[in-house]
Image (tube, rainbow, N blue to C red; front, side, top):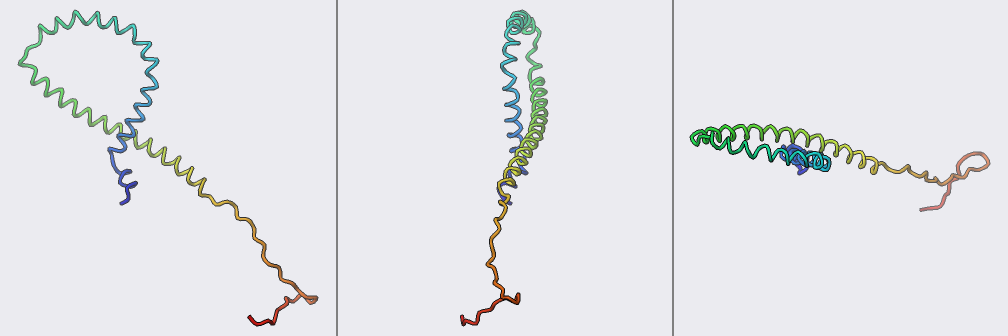
Length: 137
């Protein structure tokens, strides 16, 4: 198998391509979100400062291991789903780019129209028959 075919069949390559495409999409949204969330952050911090102290009193240490296992299991499942989603997105990106490259390559590979070459003319005698030379070669 060639390197290109190995890469085309590799889920990790598609996941990386999908992650890159997703990152670009989200980075384009950042400037608008920064302006929108600037005021909300201050309000949220003030509201949750009081609530944190209330929750610290309610947490029981013996519940933490079970909660950690539940979170880890959920995280593993969700991570697998995200990788599958990124791989699918990456397949679309790679295939779209492959089509564009193929179109460009195809356009470059088309041979230029061949110029017509002139063939030597045969001379004909008065009777219309072709002249032949009798010289030895």
